[in-house]
Image (cartoon, rainbow, N blue to C red; front, side, top):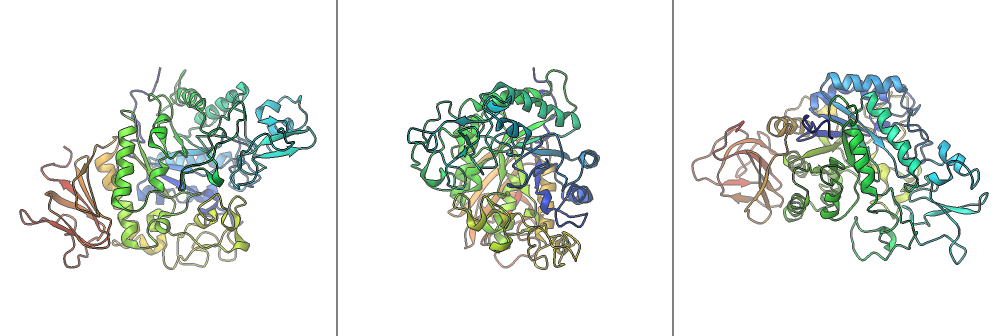
Length: 551
């Protein structure tokens, strides 16, 4: 029984905000962001209008992979604060109508986790079967051809016990063995521990991973292309993407739904589902009994072009089960920032991308700084911190530090992230060009535009998955109806005229400044039968002709 089946699923129509804690705000002068900084900026997040905050990993870690190598699933990283800070953050967010999601890493632990330390003690240790171990292959080397995220063999030789252990990421991140029932039991307790503490759910790292092929068969060659194809010429058919993983999420869904007992308010499971096919993405929703939300990476890696983006959206919505809630995001700590990847820093394109993100049905996820058009930062090699992608890592889309630099709060040398005399853990970008302080009081800024979009989204889509219907449009234009709204987005470098009738314009990427031939400002009406001319890279949100607000 789903005790929350009749409860409000607050993530429907919501905006979540991914907050990279280490780069958000340093309140103790050590050069690292902390939970005190998150608490200090709750009023900003409330002003922006987000519904939930997803925190990057907050659990203790040696930081070989900056928190994604967990050494204690029931604690708080000392760089960030204490459990009291987590409690205060959950309470403070709740007072402002926001929820807090934690990042959960179930595919692997740190080699410093007590489970692995014990497992490495001997072949007979109590936690040996918590991890994937194997003897050498026929040639005396690794047991199969699997490669890790750096392109090296995914197996590390452990001389003291004479076996290899599996690591799909760094050697200090040994993969857990989900064939072992005790691993399931441990994670069930981990979920309950944090849900009992008041977190609203989890973003699940490597959600497509978990189970590995029981026979440890070789991965086949990769025949596809693009960022979602397997890296290093290998399709990870056996080292990830195994069907048994779905049972884990069915079990976790029952916990999140509060059976037996129940939690106050619905809890959500959001998966990092790194799959290229919307059909495989749909499988993670199950029959409304697995994940409630699953990241859509085909959308993340689509081109900023009308046919590409609209095609992914249409395919996704056609494949998802009835009632499933799609997720749309464009930036994160791995893939980089969309204002750089999609837009090349062009503010027109940044506004257009935000307009689309805010008007698609389901759940929108922003990455910290998206709302101000923050771009990737060129971090010199000697200052790069990410071991996985240092120097540009062939398995990644460039060095990942470029999208993890300090939040740009103001124009000071450290962008307001830390005190003037403190060196931040990564160099700050140009706060004089792009910052919260430079935009918050400017009605024409990207930040104020993003806030207006979120406000409109909440008013129109709050607590529901809006309907979506693509509309005929000339080349370069993406036109669709979302609920009672019509969205026109010109993804071209030339003016485009749309003759389909729409009602009053509610928001325009052009704001209130209208060059000749450009779509009229928000609220302005047009003569009967007049077409709308959209300037290059301009978008508008209008009331659908004949629809009244609230219908």
